[in-house]
Amino acid sequence: MADSSIDEIWNVDNEPEVDPKAEKQAETDAQETEVVVAEAVYTVKLSEDYADSVEADEVTVSVANYDDFKLVRGEEYDVPMIQGQLLVESPAVEAVE
Amino acid sequence: MAGLRGNQAFLVAAKQSGKGVEPTKWQDKYFFSGGNISPSRGTDQLAETDSNRNAGDFYVTQTAVEGSPEVYVRDDSVAHLLEYALGAVAHSGEADFTHTITPSAALPYVTFGKQQAGVLFEQFNDVKVDELTISAGTAAPLTASFSVQGRSAVRKTEEWKAELAPPAASTVAPLNYNQATVKVGGGATSLVSSFEVTISNNLTLQQTDDSVPFDVVEGTLAVSLGFDMIFEDLKEYNKFHYGGEAGTTQSATIFTTSAEFEFARGEKNSLKFTFPKIAYQEFPVEPDPGGGPVVVSVRAAAQRHTEGFVTAVVKNQVAT
Image (cartoon, rainbow over all chains, first blue to last red; front, side, top):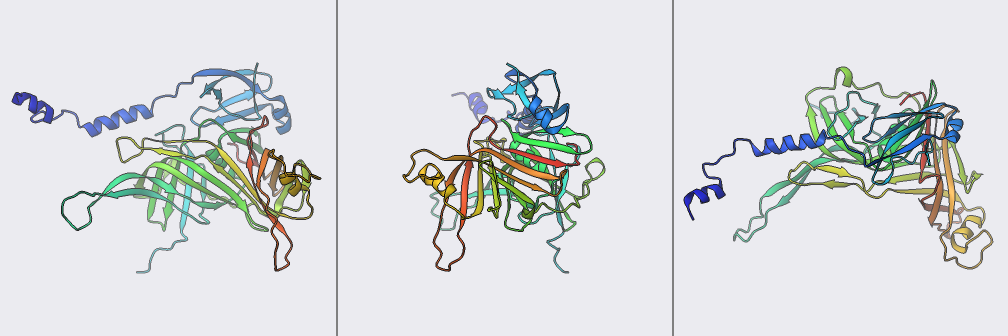
């Protein structure tokens, strides 16, 4: 086998131009800033029963790793669905058939 | 020089908007009633046949965050702890707010900060709550003990400032078991003398090509309930073993019921747990040579139900 091949295999005189650790960190950072893309959406509304129970016409829903969304009585919204299920099993949130 | 005092310490916490995203403001400041949170360091040892009788050298396998801090339960901050452990919350109200906390498919990443003795300032990033236990014995304040797993720790050289300056600690009294109202099977009962709910997320710390774990991932959610109940009659015992209040033969089907525990220091400040469906797992009735009254230590687990697995409602004067 030619020396050049050995050099290539063992990286002799072929030091990488980019520090692999820094490169890996950059990849990790890129992954961390990726926006989670929802698989689909559900149409939901504020549950009338819940709205009555808390005596409020609007409710703000916070779900892990997603932006808060506000539900106003009588209005419908599209919210993300992940892992095949409604984002949240909250009595405030009612799926629209 | 005397050692630094152990009782000078606090914990601050804030929900992150996503993995790797530091919060811009702390949500709450807690004092420890027990436990700790700290960087963790896994090590292992080399072992090879090198004819050397001296034990092999150590190396680092993982750097992460772990701990089980315990704090008193106050209505102005417990909603956040429950949100960290369950994942979703619905906020409503204007001056007086209602927060309805329920399970969601994922848990939020949380950043914790710890100050100890005025010299140690550590920030723990990308942390999730593995297990949250809220409990109280007879006449005792409620405590929240939460075990956590996280990806990384950073030591700060000074306390957090500006937007991240730690907020004032709550001055309201912790909730107490003497403020409890209990319903079992839909009916009010005064026979229950203690309470313990445990929310278990069965987290996995995923490690790939670095000592810093890649992620913290939720497993199956399990919720267990425990309480001590004065053994006044056979009804619940019969339901558990014999299929009904008047049952006489052992039942092959699981008995389920519902339970509700509310702790209120007024109409506008409270914590309520609703378990639409629970299955008793233990209902032990033990003889006592000392002749004391029989108290049953009931253990139950939340079951799937159309009205939800478990719901916590917190009323306070904190908007979100």
